[in-house]
Length: 142
Picture 1 (tube, rainbow, N blue to C red):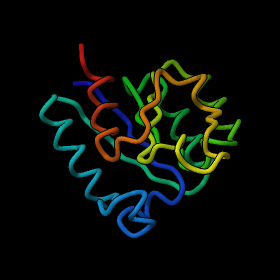
Picture 2 (tube, rainbow, N blue to C red):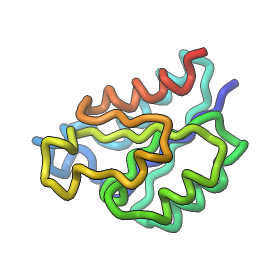
Picture 3 (cartoon, rainbow, N blue to C red):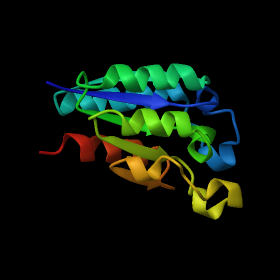
């Protein structure tokens, strides 16, 4: 059975209540539940983690090495400036797909650049919660 790690970064614990015009009304708990159901149908074990703390996210990425076959990662605001998280991704052998619920390229200019993009397998932006599903499919399709 493949194992995939889902990491959601800062403020994503507020999904469903934080700026619903941008992020929608689906809660983090609902997102995780739905994605776990899809994973089970594909014979995939999905572990979900959310943290508002950079060091916790770095620890999770480092611990994922050789333990998971892929990581779905929404780094939230860390996308734009966390060289430490970027370096943690670069240091492991696990493919990472970066996901953003909103289209960051249609938002404020500071959101247009991802320091993670160069070290991830791919990036999915602007497709809402569907982006997480697409990342799961990309990491688990044979």
